[in-house]
Length: 310
Image (cartoon, rainbow, N blue to C red; front, side):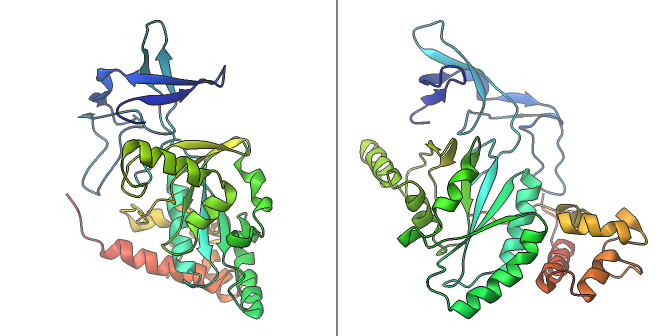
């Protein structure tokens, strides 16, 4: 979207159509079940409310081409709605972590996986800068990450500057909208440029047309890549999950849910001090990565200690 003009890709013709948005989108009355209605704090609820809504990158819309100017007439319900980047209906996130500089963080990985689960996003873990780490240290890191692979996560190892491992990623984009995420310095922009060398030129052209630097403009766009689309941003930076009740945390751990079948108190077990806990047993028997359970306990304390926001 630029200057209230929206580029819409027609599902049938695959052609790009420039549309304007109807004024009715500015304010919409939402009920508690609306996909546009979000809980922001523990004290706020998804009550009926009137909020400002505009089409955003990733939205599915209907448009009217009967007039000289095509107009977006409806925004279809969103399956997710991210803030940074400002994009909707994302299918997956490439979680980029560097092997070194900065060091790989399992604490941050587990936090990101919780957020992905909350938003209904499929994470793909990408480990960058594998050329900068000692061979033995890389083997050790891969051994620890094997736990995540064993519970269903895809993991790829790349050296973006030399394009090592980039080709192994191309199939993950098919029929999906993808964004990148990761802490500063892990190489998100380098990875994006390796995946789409032409993207740097396109974004520079846009920046020049707008008369602003590409890092200060709010322009966001989807680009076609290997059968899908990728958001032209180095990733979202907001990494705080919104969990208000301690008992909700375990619901975002796929491996814990499976292990809880062996818990004495089943779904009511918090996996902390309860007797006969399948999750604690797996931790004590080294059947799961130590940091996986220890990070869970850390997050639980964070949730318990957070202050109510109004």
